[in-house]
Length: 131
Image (tube, rainbow, N blue to C red):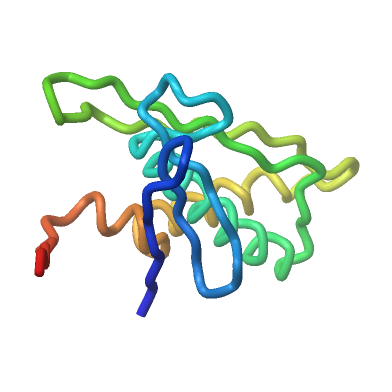
């Protein structure tokens, strides 16, 4: 089970996990904070990259640079349009197979292995409990 705690702070909101990591959450005007939508996009990009990295490295193809930009347009109030993940990769020098390996691994991760991506693609039940 994955769990985070989100609470109001003096200057916005903060999410924490059991390992002590913290991230500031704001409304888009809060300096140094992510909006909830930005966190969603970061979660998707992070899920793909932290899954792609070990799978390509295990095959002997560690990318010199592995990054991504994740974007989405707001198409209506409280609705996002298509989310686009654009990889920014520098292949390892002298590795003729790295591009093909990366493309195959990234596709499998995107299509099947990324939990966040899978959650966004399929309808999920989200429950709310207000005591």
